[in-house]
Structures are given as C-alpha cells and as structure tokens.
Length: 320
Ligand code: ZN
Image 1 (tube, helix red, strand yellow):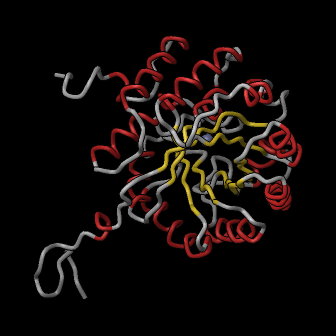
Image 2 (cartoon, rainbow, N blue to C red; image 1 turned 120 degrees about the horizontal axis):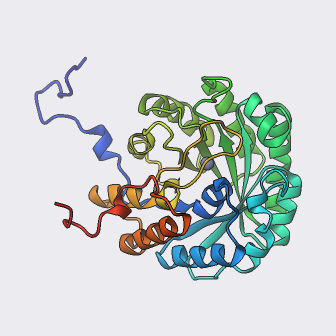
C-alpha cells in the first residue's frame, strides 16, 4: 500500500492524472444555442448569422447553432429553421442542433442538421419544467428521438441534463445517470454528453460519475457540458481530462444558461478553455485571438462585460 504519492521503491512521484491527459480536445461552441437562448433580448437573425460566421472563422470543428424547441417557451430560438438554413458551410465544421422532443428532431432533420443532440434531464422536477414530462417519460421519448434522428441519417448525441445535480432535487443518483447512458447507447446514440446544467458538480463528483459511466458507455464518445454557475467549470474540466474525456461544450464569453433553472449561469467560456488547454499543451485547433475578438464583439453588442476572463486581456503578456 502506498501513501503520499510515491511508488513503494521510492522512485519519482506518481502522476496518473498528467499521464492520462489527451493530446487534443474537440470543443463544441454552444454559444449560439445555450448562449443566445438565455439572452433576455432576442438577437435578430441577421446578427446571429454574423456572430456564428465569426465563430466559424475561429476554427471550430463543431458548433451547436440552434435548438429546435417550442417557440413560445423559448422565443429566442423561434428562428432556428432560418438560422439552420443560413449556416455558413465550411470543410471540417459540423453543425449541430439540440432537441427536447420528437417534434424537435423532425424539425432538425427537415433543416438538414447532420448532428442532433437528443437531450433529456436526469431530474424529474427539471424535466417537468424543461420538457413538460417526468424523467421516465422524457427518457422514453429520448430513446425514440435517438432512433428517429439516427434513421434520418444524423449523428446522434444522447444528452443528459442535470447529470451532476439539480437545484430542485439536489444530488442526482449516479446509478440513474448510468442507466440513462445505457438506454441511450442501446438506442443507437453515437455519443453521450453529460451536462452539469446547474453547475453543481465538483471535481470529486465528476470523477465519481465518470468512473461509473465510462464503462457503461462502452466505446461511445463521452463529452461533458459544464456550467460555471459556482466557478467550478474549469476545475471540473481538468478532472475530466484525466479520465481521457476529449469532447467538451463551451460558450464564447461564458454566455449561456437554462431558461428553466433559477439562478442559472453561463457555460465555461470557450476562450478561457482554449487558453487553459493551450497552456497545458493540449491542441484544440482554435485560433484564440479570433475567438477573443468574437467575445469582444458580443460584449459590445450586448452592452455588458461577459463572464469570460481571457477575452479581456489584450494579448499574451500584455497585462502588467
Ligand atoms: Zn447548458
């Protein structure tokens, strides 16, 4: 038995976390969906397209552009079909859409979305607010959504909201999340995204969840979606990296939040995430300076300072 991080022979200290870090990470920019849906003022479609184009220019390989959700419940996404039609097509860039029910999947397929996230909450109370049904009904529908999206030729992400806690229900049992992952994998999901919708996760709960869920997910890509509500987003990401997770959602400037979670706050800021990963020698393929420009442009347009830190620094080393 060893304590204190040393091998029994007294060799160099162990570094299991460092040794397991991935060489590269795929960041999905979700600002146009998670971010724009949470703004009190509706951003005009032309401007959305302009911001989306700027993000595409920063070199992302994945951007979640829209949610196909009820236009009366989430009026900020009422123009989803038009936004989808006008997305700038780029080599190496895949656009995705979020859906919460079968109707949303149908609309996403009609709009030609090639990657669809079928998202279900692990919390009954949140599910009732977000999707109008308890989590068992929502999971049943989630399975149908995954099957429908796959039959329609899309790559399908099974998304699990509130996987690390719920403001209404508190802690979410890990077994429940594991069962949901198994059902989604069985239904034909190509990837799983575990979302900390309420920002209640911490590095220990993230590690417990991943220890349990990764074996269930088999070979599927498991991504994580952190909200920075309590300032733990990047700490949680750093722990997940050590589990070999290499797919994360992030939002430019740290925009974002769930309209059905009181006190919700934004996603981990994409540019802060790129900065962290670059500092650790992990590739993202994203142009940080261009991305900072996007965050600045959004900050000017929205008329407020955004939660992200890095976009407020001029250039590397210029802060004194
Ligand atoms: Zn979110």
